[in-house]
Length: 202
Length: 310
Image (cartoon, each protein chain N blue to C red):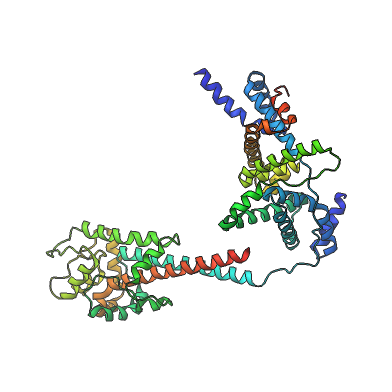
């Protein structure tokens, strides 16, 4: 979708045009859903939180003041995910289950891959999700948005609501933790990772 | 020495590796790190590992959405109940803060020897009633508090109330806590100016007892922890400035001002003099308990709001 179209859709949404807003939903739902999925580690929670985020986005569309709409909508999704994490914390009974959820593999079937490759991918995916679950939420968010979603530092500053300096340090700390987590399990990881890890001439 | 410097430099540059990877370093910082990477194998290794970490993360495919999240209908702008609960929560928070502030004012006024005007008068009669049959140490709760618009648990519950306050809000404990000790301090420090064989009022009850027994005898030993403005005025009805009690000039002037400005206060004092500090005490207790109850109900409402939010 071209940016100009997006601007029109946003404008119409502001005036309460639900169809226009739903067109925006279609554009961004995959990113929003995946962010929630990575933040929360559970498909069910991600489903609810994604819906919640879009409802909130519809209500707050007036507060979008230009810049990247993607960053704006991902910020709402991030806040919805934080709310969900907070709710989990305040429900001690289910926190164990939540912790388990956060480490469960997310099914990312890739039909093109052969069975062996598919198995490796699943294993790596599992470790990545578990590793991400060990990060403090704000570092997790920064790493996911940067490395999985590929946001620029500028968009990140908007999505995280902080300065680029803070963005930089959150990414650095988050990646550092992920690095340690993965390196501690390097023998469990696919060869691809190990080879790259040992190659010091980059 | 040189090694230590190098290590510090290494640690500082190491932090830039992530931004280096994203090409988000300033040219200068980039050049410095490049130079360091030429000589530091550990950093080269770490950079490679970070690159691999980033690589596997960015290779993660995005999952397909399980369904469309398009909204079937425009969501209602607000949901009925939550805002109401929020408002209630806000009101209670405000109330707690206001009560805590009032408590602080009374406590501070207590120390400064400035009994709060109207508050004192409205509470005075009640305090008087209680007063007759009572040589008991202070702190008995009850009827007075109705002034706060709060109904209270039976007597003696009071101290528990005080304790209860402690864990919940932030405001209450400090004031309650510091009221007592300082009062004690003042009483002890007070070198009892002129006169008075000094019953050296150690505590409230003692002070009150003394005043109660002998309003006319021994011109009001300046026992009280508060400069006991009432007692002072009794001794010098013509409102002489500079009451003997105060040691701080500020306090002195305040008190004399009080005495001079309101001559009829002296009359009122005639009846209420004995209980002035009781009144303040009651106010403190009442407000303290009020703060406790407000904070408690605030906490409850807040919890409700949170639960409902789920």
